[in-house]
Image 1 (cartoon, rainbow over the protein chains, first blue to last red):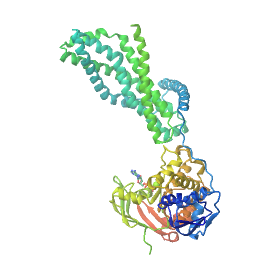
Image 2: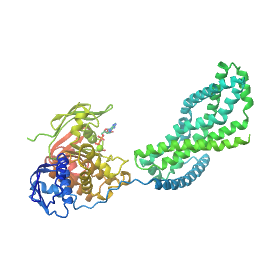
Image 3: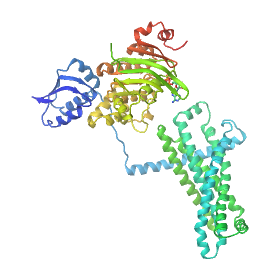
Image 4: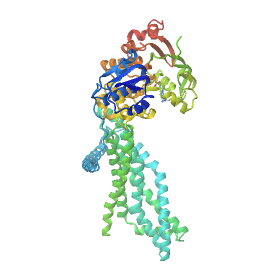
Length: 357
Length: 248
Ligand SMILES: Nc1ncnc2c1ncn2[C@@H]1O[C@H](COP(=O)(O)OP(=O)(O)OP(=O)(O)O)[C@@H](O)[C@H]1O
Ligand SMILES: [Mg+2]
């Protein structure tokens, strides 16, 4: 490549491999204004080569006249791949500002709360209707969903509750022993497991297992146009897909919470027998004494409310999915984070009830 | 006698127990447009995936640019892949980035071209598939046919020496489809590309095909030039060229 009298003379192959070097070398001559590019000795050109010619012409826009001696075999190629005559939009690299984002998310939350309330009424309505009229639901789906949500979670919820019971008992046992009040371990574990740990531990695990599964299932169905297919067949997707899960979780959650409470308390029992040398009878009597019927009822109610929040939030994020497969992942993650957050906030609201007593 | 650019010998492809390609032997010649024909499910996509090692054949030999590729280390095969473009049957655009970035991926991965050149190339390629106006949109915001065309722009971003297109015109209207054929002819003539296309559109085959490979139930029923195909004496093949349909 050389420049003679305002003419850039190119030779050989002008392609994606030679262009970076050519452009580098050309930068040295940028002070000179070009009028022509001579292509007589060019053997071949590809689209990167044509783009190179375009760039040089644009940089000499004021002085440039034309391409000279274009070999026949490359003239069509230049015509096809030249960008000089096409007008396309400018490329946007969108990144909205911080303040803008805050504003946007405020509106998003407002919208989300409206959507979620609407969704909740719809789900509860259809699940109530479903008791009398089973049309429009997947066959046997409640049983199948109950097995998925309930049976398969028993192992993990059981073992985690046991571990939690053991940890809490061990942590407190040493302390209680100092004051000679070992016997209160039973009261403590029972109250903690029933009022707090049972429902919340179960809810967090259910959010992780079933909430995410609900969100990803619905999001996938949406992305692959299955939801649209249901709509075309005049089937309400909420009734068909969500209501069975809602019913199943309403059925399973109290059982899972009960399981968690019993196993967690058993963890405490183990510690008090083997570490604090209490007798089983003392422990069980104290537990039964301290727990009231309303304690247990509220715990189960809590469990059901948490479960509803998990289903509704999973469904909400599932239906909100945007884009393709990668949207499914985002929806799933968002639903798990949001439902665990919601569970803890709801739990805080429930705790207000204990302020009085 | 021409030297084949891709030479496939006796490949067998299986999905589990299901044998999809039985002993396929074909040659693909440089600077020609080869059309692969065959009924739905006969193994056309599998055949292409075998050549590109997206799905490894059970047995057989595949030579590309004269080099045996079966058993090649991935790093070595990647060097061959840099000279090959592929338009997937479902487009397979990356959903998380916009159209511009989709087309820029191969350019940024395999060249050291400066950004201003890359930008020009992308604009031209998108313009060639009539998508200059959607440069900033995301794949999920495009129609099926638009996705296909954007995916074609990505496949030709690097001016590959060999281009595979799995049903490029499925879902396109006749005019867009004809434009696409013209583009494919230009790519062949002006950039000396070798192009392998799966298509069932009879009109399109007449416009562009140099050579035909006709697959049936995993076997090569016919291979040869377009002219030969029309009078080859094989009932299924002639039948297809008469009515443009497979079977009865
Ligand atoms: N990932 C896979 N796993 C198992 N079997 C598969 C897979 N992909 C394809 N097959 C089977 O291989 C056979 C050939 O499929 P292939 O996709 O190659 O057909 P095709 O000729 O491209 O069809 P079409 O024209 O419908 O695209 C089919 O019977 C299909 O069931
Ligand atoms: Mg296919």
